[in-house]
Length: 321
Image 1 (cartoon, rainbow, N blue to C red):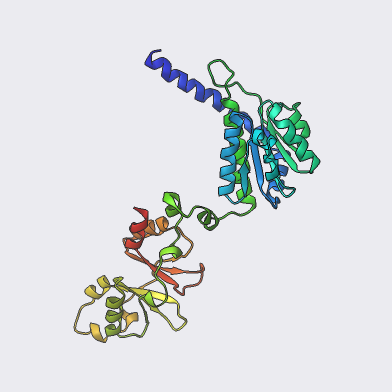
Image 2: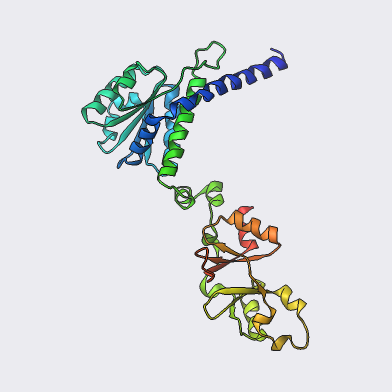
C-alpha cells in the first residue's frame, strides 16, 4: 500500500465510526433515564461484564464508574460461570454488554440474575436477543457498519458501547452531584491527583498568616511582614474582615520621614483579591499571574471576608510544575 492509501484507510475508519456514533442519540431515551436512576440507587456494586471485545469495553466502563463515585467491578462471564457468580449479591445491579446478545457464556449469568431478582441492564444491538429479553432495562445500540476492512471485527460497535457506558457514568456523576473534592479522594496519587489539589490543601493558616489590625503602626506591620516571610500583610477591621493588604512594594513606595508613624489603613491597598478555599491550585496560580501579584488570601464562603489562610505563588508553582 502507498502512503496515501494507508492515510485514506485510517480516515475511512474514523468516518465509519463517526457515522455509528451519530446514531447513538436514539439510545438516550426513557430507558436511559431509568437505567441511570436504577444505578444511582444501587446499595452494593454495579457488576459490568461482556464477552470478548465487549468484555474489554465493560472493564473500562467499570473503571470509569468506580473512579466517578459509583462502586463497580468487572468480571468475565466465563469466570462467573465457573465459580465467580458468588461476587454478585442482591444489592448489586448488572450491566451486560453483548453485540449479538446471544453469547453462550451469558446463559448461566442470566439465569442466576433472574433467580435472585438482580436488576439487569442489557446493552446490545440485537433487540430480539436472549440478553434483551432477560433484561429489566434495555439499551439498544443502533445498527452500524463495522469499520474493519471485512466488516466483521468489532470496531464501530465497541466504540458505540463504550460511549454509551461513558454517558451512563457522566449522567450518574451529575445525578449524584459528584464534585471535584469527591474525585480528588479517589485519585490521591500521580499527576491527576496533583491537578485536583485545591487551595485549602496547601494554604498557610492560623498563626502562619501575616495579619495586622487597621490601626496597627508601621513598626508592627514591618515586624509581621518580616516574621511571616510572605512579603505581604493582610489588614483586618474590627469585624475581622480583610479590608486591605500591604506589600513590601507598598512600603518602598511610601518611604518618607512620616512612614513609621502611619497606621496600616493609611498605607494599605484596598479591596484585595480573595479566593475561595475550594478553587484548584492551578486556578489560583492563573489569578496571581493575571493580576501580577504573589499572594492570595483565602476565604471560606463567597461573601465572608474573614481570611482563613494565605497561599503564595511559590506554593502553587511547587505543585503545578
